[in-house]
Structures are given as structure tokens and as C-alpha cells.
Length: 307
Image 1 (cartoon, rainbow, N blue to C red):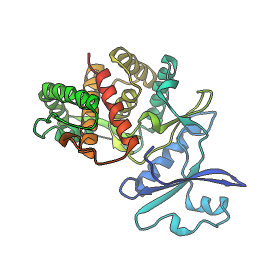
Image 2: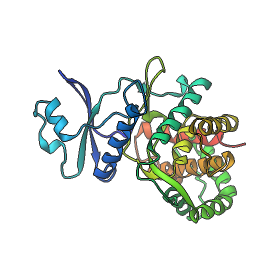
Image 3: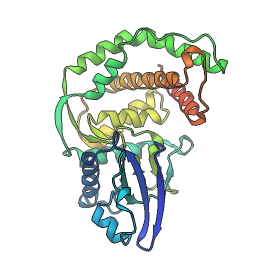
């Protein structure tokens, strides 16, 4: 999850999650889309509650919490506060993954997109594709010569060599798609594995971090989720097909093109973390253990994405 302030509230009326979001990541408009999505699942015949924790409106806060919650917590200078139903699951881990669960995740994502495809729908060139094309316009990425961990240096150097080899092909592919309109609607976007919670019996799945949600091409959710599951090419192809079968619509990009978009996205994320830690200049200025773990995991995902 994003590491934003999160509190569990246990009341006579139930258990809730109180969470703070920077106004730069969550807007009133996004909260409206989020609430709209939650209301669609029961109407679609879901037997359980919505797989997205439902944000409670202000009058519901007052009713459920007997008005003890100060109004400053709902909207302060830099934050929006949301109260939603508490989800009892645990973050989805790599060790919990099976082929059957991967297939269920693709069905879950297809259901989410099918129910949300009319929320703020539009058809225009993808902002996400343009962002990635722009991120590749820098000069060739340098190979570090020194660092704290020689194994990390070696893996990163190999990564940079492959990026420099493939960058021109990526740029041509992305630029072509910056000119093409694609169907878009409200999506989760940061659908990383750890932003999903799963019940102990693996029967239920919830999305719990919507701070990066926006109107975008839904295939970005697919690329993000599949990529975070540490899949190789064969599993990628199966996952894409499982999503297509469950969603009953044709993706504008082929499995091979989505694979390329996945590799581009992972490369840009690795580049981001290398800058966070001043990795290219050989300095490790932070003590962010979780950040280093994510950096190394991204390198692993990158290595799996070679075929």
C-alpha cells in the first residue's frame, strides 16, 4: 500500500478504515467515481459486499460515529480523509500465488472493468502511453561503476544494457500509440499485487488503494497486475487470454504489445528507484529498506520479462 496514514476504528456500528490522502492524489471527483464503482457490485448481483471498500459520505460519518469525529478530519489544508468498511484480508504475496489464483485474479479484474466501463468513459489517446514515451526521451542510461552491493550493481548494469538495446523500438511503438484514440474509463491504475487484500481461504479479493486511480485505458490495470505476479512469458500470455475470455471484449493491444508495455513500465520504475537512491552515482543515501526491496523485486520482474 502507499504508506499513507491509516487507522482502524472499532465502533458499536462496525469496524472501519480511516485514511488520509494528499489532495494531489485523491480528489473529490475521484471519490465520486470510487463511490459509484462500489454501488455497482450489489446491483450486478454480487452476493458479497463490494470488492472495493466503500467510502462513507459525511452524513454517514455523523450517523455511524455519533458525530464525535471532528470536521477537520474530513478535509484539512492538504488532506482528504475517507472512512470505508474495514477489509479483513491480508496483502497478496508471491508465496500465495497458484495458477488457479492467477486465473481468478484475471476474472476479478475483468468483472471490475466490466462494471466500471461507463464511469467517466471516453475515447482519446492514452495519457499513460504518452507519459511513458516522454520518460524514454532522456539520453542513454548510464551504467554505474560502483555501489554498496556489487550484486545489485551487476544486475542493474545488465538491465541498462538491455534498455539501451531496446529503447528505440519502444519509442517507435509508444509514439505510434500516442496518436491513436483508445477506449478509457475510471480504473485503479496502481494495481500492484500488494494493493490487493485476499481472505485467508483465498475466496475473496479486495482492492484497497485507489490513490492513483484516474480515467485511463483499462489495459494498464492488466499490465500492472500481471507484471506484479512475477510471471514469465507463457504465464503472461495465459493471463491476458483469461482476462479477454472473462471480459468478453477485444483488447486494442496484442499480448506481445502488452508484454512490451510491461517491460517499458518496469524499466521506468527501476530508473525511478535508481534515482531515489542515487544508484547511478554509486551513493546509497537512504535507509529505506522497503524501497530497496522494491528495487530488487523490480529487477527480478525485469529478468522474468526477457524471452
